[in-house]
Image (cartoon, rainbow, N blue to C red; front, side, top):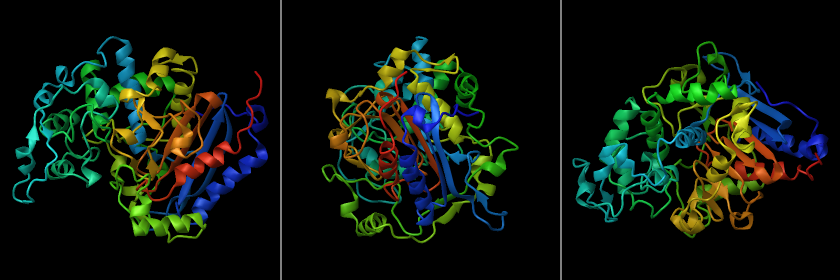
Length: 459
């Protein structure tokens, strides 16, 4: 099911300039940045541009090459997070919780979660719990709001930055991908030390997986059941789920990575502005990108024909477990842009969506001021965080085109979406290149989109 199509002119989109966007997408494939990709641009509730290029599947032992099309399914990874946030806020409207409620009211094990004191434990492969001798108590309890804004002190195992990350790896606290049910893994997570005192820093983390568990507790339903009944069915998102449904296996794209490149967990030091300047390999990649040079073809890391995403997972990851199509996610994004309603189905009140899209970081600060200046390829100066996604505070500080109040988020395989209420515009970009820090694709996409947006036509 697709958004209705209207002529670009009627939506305030310049047809000639849209060709720059389409050509940019083709160049991503020609320069071997990605094997295939698609982009959908909608304004005033209608699609003004859709373009796909390249391949979704490589030719090989598993079959013939397949083009990247509108029907292609992808691993959404962290674009699952906004869906989980919407589910939580639907339950918030029903009175199941308040944002300042302690997390431990619902998951008691988090009442005693210790906090890392910042000192470095002696490296000892035979003692994976050494960090637990370097902890202090929580100064204040973790709240639901801190879970929703990634300020709870949680982290990710792939960060490779602190002893806390290492503790996650040593104890199998991997979200998504674990073979452990969500309730059990979240309970185990409560024994891991927090990276910092709750509310003191913004850190990209497994918080959305904890939120997914809260959705289960508040609703009394498994996360996949809640999503299906209360979000996917009302919005007509027939292609979205925690695995590819039977009969659609051939639509899933391969997952690839650059022939040379960094790791997902690369984080810049506060104040750098960009981690590229600190890493020679990234400098050469950035220089090649700026000069339009071709790269070596990306390498296959998860063939679609044998991917674990073809099977029902043991862990329902609210932080990164969904697969879906470009039209499905466009419907979800349009619901947010409409203030909680789409096609006659209201999921959230307009005031609730407006509240979610405000910056919830303390003192209206940006993510850089909260301790994490760079994540992936993106500087977080001028960018705050709402309830489930990033919020643009100042495009000049962020050094990229956009509007104040615009909301966005992406996934580890370089997928991305944003909604811009000021321009009545939404964009969904899908590809399957891991990690998302490989190239500045999302920044370039913004420029390619906004250069085609003219004045809004009168109603």
